[in-house]
Image: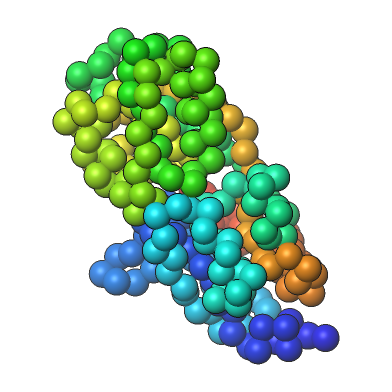
Length: 236
């Protein structure tokens, strides 16, 4: 069975916007690391690339679209977790990253790490892998409260951080480095809070597609294309 038979010649790729540098829209056109990677994979496999936008408030809902056939794979800066593996089969990781802490250095210069958050409110996006991390901090009394924002509400979350309505935000480091470039009052003050592997996922049991994507990604790694994409979008 060929990969074209598995996906009928079109690979439907789901991403949650905005999540730069993994996926973003510029003048209505999708771009970013996941976009470029899956486009390169489609070119390698002789498939037509099709973008599918996930608009749910809880990021974890994106994996439901695999089982109901709304899309063929998820490429959205997604960390491989045990709970997500109950809904999806993940390809080999393309990046190892981790959670970072962003603070308003003008308003709260004393916050340098998660150890300085006692009595403060920290915010995350609903369904993000930062959520269980901050909920654990709250359970341990290391933060006063956790504020949840919808997945597409990252702009509002950062606006609130600038306005002093919350004390900190936690999210994967590449995303926070990207967003804080245009917000001089905000800074990534701590990285490597967690160590997480990120990868593309497919419907559980879809071994043929997973094997094809893994093989294509491996070829892109061998010919240097994957490394070039990582340097272009993620950084050194």
